[in-house]
Amino acid sequence: FHSFAIPLANSMKNRSILRITFSAVAAASILHTSCDALLLTSISPRSKRVASSIRSVQSSLTSEDATSNQYDKIYFDIGVKTQPNNQRGSTILNVGRLWFNLTPTNHPHYLPLHISNLCNLAASKRKAIDSKATYVGCTFQFSPATIDDGFGRYRWGHQCDGYGRNGIQVSLASGQLTDWAEPFSDPERVKDCVHASFGGKYYGWRYDEISDLLSTEGGDDTAAILLTVPIHGPGAGTSKFSIVRVSESPREWGERLLLNSAVVGFLDCSGNGGFGDDTNDGRSSLDVLRAMAQQKIGVPTIVGCGTEMNE
Image (cartoon, rainbow, N blue to C red; front, top):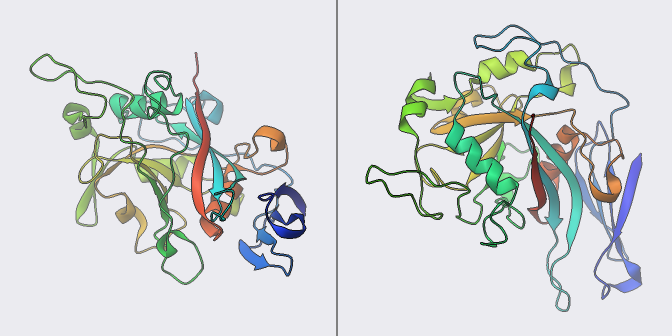
């Protein structure tokens, strides 16, 4: 096992520590020790990556275009916010980095406004002007329904509301621009990428196309985990986004998890899940997401984010 330890608050007795250990086969669990330490057991690093076999899909992409180094990317560094103590408040513990491949700009289901909004907030372009124009410090919803505990109550997704600020402004019919806190829409593009599914609709990049792109001989080494934004309902046209584990959900759920949302990217499962002092510790983004889903310590928090754009 590979592990790293992070000191907890100074006020805790006997220099208690939280040790996060990643294991490729074990589900995350929490053990309380007699010296008030917490142990989060998760997924150990894979010894090597399994190369993806890219299939032809119904889009303008070639197999060369579909390789991961051709995508614009967005990443979120995830920490876990521990329960506050009386003296020091909460402590953020490193879980890892999630890398997402975004819909290519030449794809027929590319949604430029929604993806630009995500990217600008992740890049914190306006943070110097507005401290809430970023995802840094934003949390994911955390409750029994968001913990993958093996008892079937899990929603198979994680939702972040952001701060309610957008990273773009959109021209209205009046010629004015939307306010930074005002929801936007892109009806012309959205109507060109609507997909019927189980009595409802979802938008953006098709799930079955992404599933084909991720098809490998490695089995567990890839999973169709999608980055989505709401198109209808609460949070539409705002900073809100979700991470949805479609291929790992029960079969009867599947694409129903995407209803009223648009798919704007997918998890780069083999992406480097380390950051900061733990950049090369062997975790993948898939390891990190599973650890984030299974931990019970506290609220998942975005402690860093950014983009990596192809020139």
